[in-house]
Structure formats: structure tokens, C-alpha cells
Amino acid sequence: MTLFCNTARAIPTMLYELYYWPDIQGRGEFVRLALEYADAKYVDVALVPEKKGGGVPALEKFLEGENVERPPFAPPFLKAGHQLIGQTANILFFLGGRLELAPRDAASKLWTHQLQLTIADFVVEIHDTHHPISNALYYEDQKPAAKRRAKDFVANRLPKFLGYFERVLERNRAGGPGMVGPRLTYADLSMAQVIAGLRYAFPSASREALRTRPRLRALDEHVFSEPKIKRYVASKRRLAFSNEDIFRRYRELDD
Amino acid sequence: MTLFCNTARAIPTMLYELYYWPDIQGRGEFVRLALEYADAKYVDVALVPEKKGGGVPALEKFLEGENVERPPFAPPFLKAGHQLIGQTANILFFLGGRLELAPRDAASKLWTHQLQLTIADFVVEIHDTHHPISNALYYEDQKPAAKRRAKDFVANRLPKFLGYFERVLERNRAGGPGMVGPRLTYADLSMAQVIAGLRYAFPSASREALRTRPRLRALDEHVFSEPKIKRYVASKRRLAFSNEDIFRRYRELDD
Image (cartoon, rainbow over all chains, first blue to last red; front, top):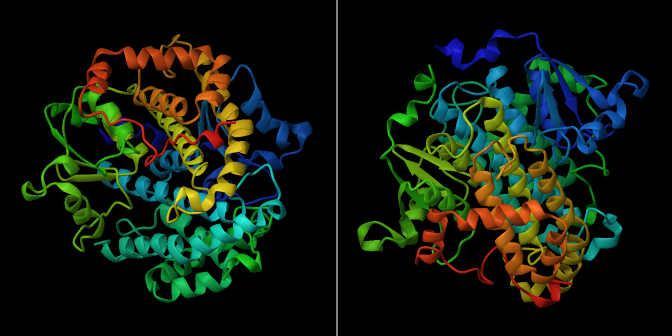
């Protein structure tokens, strides 16, 4: 019966196509980490030359094409055979089942997804510290608002989110290393990426906030010690954090 | 085989417990609309007297209790038997299968969820027009930033989101009335709620933005003409929109 409910497992060698902007990690990175950790075959389409059907025009074809029946709102999106899937957490929910990056039982699957959605909320708030007014404006054009928003983030939201995820790790009856059951899930990979991003963007505030969260520090270390993740991070496929991205280091915001 | 994959259908008379703050619609309203439309049996726990185990303390027990194995980050959350489910879109994904508020095929289920996640992103941006700096501050303490953020929202984000959902409606090959297949889904109920909220919060800007989006106007009208939804809206269970909520009417933001 499992076979019928999870027919996807019958196609382990599927070639996934990831569509995301080139030059930044962005939200695409949460999907990349899952694909890399599971050793899945995938193409990062924006990195394929335009004359071979890749590049940004390949993304735009799906975002703006008039014949796309179920268009994504924004990258990242994933093509798996004929299926086109958008929204980072939705992509990971889909991949979780196929790549064994989440437990199989329905309740734990939903719980893993719930954690991913809470990570997604956290990521929006991290991003908005440097862009509280508009993405259409430069950081420099919204600095006073950014400073106020970042101050609230560091004082209230950062400890609230990290405290929550630390509790989740503590209460995982299987004892970890991740948040759900005895094995790492895609939500753990995303959580480690967020911690790495916070360390880049808010070196001082995140050091302070992580001081009292040993389980999150251990999770971060565990994920980035996994051979497949180490291989990926050492490769050219892993881009560096940068101030064109979600996590940005502005000293004046890290108080 | 369907029976095995959807064992939930075997318990149609389950009593759901919805946990959400009293006195506001908030994100709980997206869940309420789904439960009401499907005529599900549910208890809005915060409205039950405290001495009968309800009220805000009942919510806090799950948010702050030290024995909750899989604690939600924030309301709304739903209790279905022993299962505790948080994150609005996750709750709706779960209910979609049980209450037949989403198609049964896996690809359409994910697509419906993808739309819900995009609606959730939209709702964050709507909320942040009046709270761009911090939820811990009053609107009055972040007015200049709110004015700038709302201006960008009305000029750029509102038409982008509404344009997207109008296209989705247009491309539904089943011809509607909703965004997926021939029947209304939970995502359609949420979309109609967002349109109602926008009409409350931004009467001028939303009138202008909806002028060229006849399919969204028709969806809104369709949803609020459904007998179960009419019954709900006419009941005391439906709270009014208010300026303590996600959608707020501040004349100075509606330019």
C-alpha cells in the first residue's frame, strides 16, 4: 500500500529543475540544501546558458508566460516531470516525501511542514529588518525605519523565534539531532541555514542569542558537518552570503 | 485504495477545537470560514468560559505549557483528536483533505496549498502597512513609516498580488468559480476574506485595483453568497472588521 500512496519513490532518478535567481542564495538556498543533502539530481536552471534554454529568461517564461496553467507567484519554483511547484515550504513538503527528508507518518509530516512555515515567517522578519518600507527602494532610502525595525527584531523577535526552536529541539523525544524524530529533516537544514545567515547578518546579536541555546548551536554544527553538506559548501555551487541577499550585514543594525 | 490513503474520511463527525484569540477575526478567520463552509462541528475554544476550560488560558496552556511535545509558535492552532496543528495554511491543508475543500489528486492539493501560502504572504504585507516597524508599538508610534509602506503597497504590491490571483482564476481550465478545479476550495474562501478585508481597509485603493479584476470580484460575490457562509456572516460568530485586527482602516494609508 505504501507503494501506491508514495508512487514517487518509484522514480528515484528523476532530474529536478530548480528555478531561482542566479547570484544570490535567497530562498532558493533552502531548496538547494535539501537537494544536495539527499544527493538528488538537479539542474539550477538560471545557471544554464541562455542559448541552452537557461538563464533568467527560463524563469521568466514560467512567471510571465501566458500559457502557464498554474503559474508561480515568484521564484523559487521546482519542475518535477510535468509538475511545477512554487513556494519554498511547499517545494520542501513535496521533496520531503520523495527524498526521505521528513518522517513518513502523516502527523509528523505536517509537524515538519509547520516548523518550515514558522522558519519562513522568521525569514520574512529577518529580511524586513533591512527593508521595512519597500523592496523597490534601496536600504539607504529606508535606514531610519530599518534601524528601528532591527532594534525591535534583536530585542524581541530574535529571542522569541530562537527560544521557540530551542524548545522544539529539547522536546523531540527521539533526542535529535534535529527537531523531528531521529533523523535530520529538510526543516533542520533550513534552520541551520538561518543560523548561518544570522551569524553573518547579526554577528553580535546572534552570538548573544545563541549563547543560551546550545541545541540550536549543536544542530547548526551537525548540519554543516554532514559530508554531503560539506561537499556542497566547499563547491562553487554554494554562493557566499552577501548584502544583496536576505541576510545582510549592516553594523548599525546589529546592536 | 483511496480509502487507505484518506483514512481521515472515516471520521466525519469529529469535533474540531479551534484555538485563536477572541475579539478579532485575525488569521483564525481563514480557518473559521473553512469549518463553517464545510459545516464541520467545531468549538472556538477562546469563547468557552474559563471555568469550563476555555478562554485565553486554554490557548496559553498549549503555547507555554512545558509538556506540549509539539508546541505551536502562535495561534491559530487546531486540535483534531490527539493531533495539534499550527500555522494557518497547514491547518487548511489538513482540513482540505478531511472536509473536501480541496481536490483529491496530489498535484492539485499542492497547487491549492501553494495559493494559500501566497495568500499568507499577501496577508503579511497587508498587515505590515500599519505595523512596518514593530507589533510591540502602537500604529501611532510608527505612522510615518506606515505611510511610506502603505504607499508602496498600494502602488506596487496590491496590483501585483491581485493581478496574479486574477490570472490564476482566468487560467483555471475548469472555468471556476474558484481558482482550482470546478469547486470552491479553502483557498477561495481565504481569497474572498482578503478581498473583504481590503475593501474595509483600503476602500479607495481596492475599488481601483478591483475595477480591472472582474474574476476576483465574482469570486468574492460567489463565496459570500454561499448559504453556509451567509449563515455564518449573519451569525454572532462572525466578528466585524476592526482597527485592532489585520485589516485596518486608516484614511491616510488609503491614497
